[in-house]
Length: 188
Length: 213
Image (tube, rainbow over all chains, first blue to last red; front, side, top):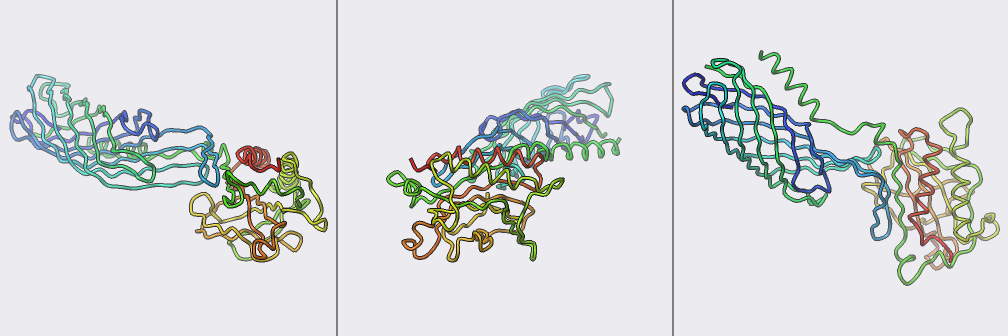
């Protein structure tokens, strides 16, 4: 995502992402570690950089057998709720300091989010796809194993707010906390 | 290093794009029941007007969207078709428990209970279900499966249906469908025989209005 501009010009990161949903907990309320982040950054100078990042996460939840009544009938089933969430963002970064090992930063990303809300019950399934705008403020740090290493680790905490929602499943705009840990490849 | 990154990306993507396990999905059958809101509502319940019913003894109709596959199901020892008699008996037990008397067809029953297994019809999502049959109510003259609009699939669904015989003339010489239950999927579910019985119990449990009291 970033590094010392005097030493490095670009970086590529790959991270494992955990999502904690803040919205629509009735649909997918459980924390999920089924997520990935991929990103590329270009360093402008020691303080600033920009880049893009793609992310893919799956949230899911299980609802035990329940009887749902509606006018003229009722249905009993257990349900597996799934939310497949893909983001593509441009971002800008600000680096607080360039330490020997740690490079803390904050960033703001904006882009497009694609989501698929899907329910599975027995062999049946229903889904609703939509596209929205997403914004992601984030703070994190890089950790260089050696001072001039081209390999490092990354940890970041961010918050996604996306305009994606499903009228079909009556979900609201998507909001979730993200925690990412991963690896960084630094290029001089 | 790039190769390792590539492998990691593919592995992560595969891990993220997950779905529930089929074995977990088919642990419970889906049971949906519907009733005619013109006949069963806050001010009226046609079931209180019935006292007798007819239900075929030992076979179920099997209707498929695959041409030439329609048949009649009989229990066959050692095969996957082992749920016919147990299902009929359980349905008859429930209907009797709700205060109705089982009679023969020539004893002028008030309603018919039909049980049909449908292959390749989907009910739980896109059903467009007419409330009437225009012909014979399809008992001993053969099985006339419910008429549905559907799309192709590999689902096998059991439909239990109540057709009004008593008010045939009042309903414009048609057998009106008063109640129906859909149970699925029969194709992928293991322990089919017992799970069908559990599903039949649930269908009646969620239909308290199905009673002549």
